Length: 113
Length: 119
Image (cartoon, rainbow over all chains, first blue to last red; front, side, top):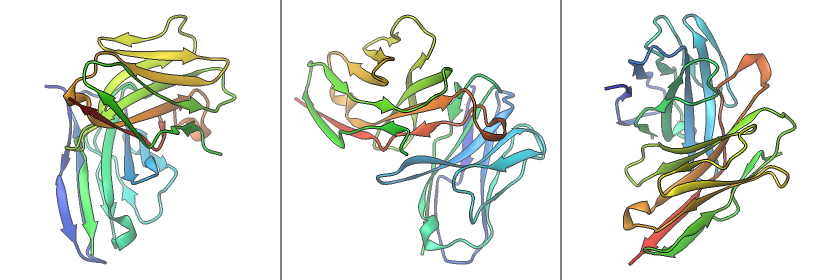
């Protein structure tokens, strides 16, 4: 089944404890990105990648890192999480140039205390 | 400036009735795409419908149709014959044709409309 998977789906952690949210897609999509969703703000892009080893900042990159060592994987790294990073996170992928016509992962609900 | 505006934080509709969710957008790019997503209480983002800026006809997908009025920069979602399972948050989103650093597939989202369908 063609899909984007994220793990974990739910995570409660403490301030400053490094964490990684994994994202994997099996559709051979070049473009992958991370969004965060906050009440009243919709979804905002954190980072994106247009291909292996090609990543760049989105609209709200502060406090996050990403890597793209393989085409299928695009992990989101929070080196030192803070409570303002409590949010619902989505990974998305699409074939490059299709203008976003791809798929979203199921979401990761992160709480930082 | 907000590029996607959804002015209805919440909407109620009775089962079997039609409902329109409003979305206006702002762009100077002649090439863009408009999306609607549904987010049920379980949290996942479900793609509903897409309209390209050059598409001549309004997009339709089953009970969903997109009322695309280019001159007014509006892209309203119409759900016909509402069902209880339509109760969810609905997001309008836009992809612009020209974005910084070739971020070709970035979506800009509105703040959403929560739809509640009652029996």
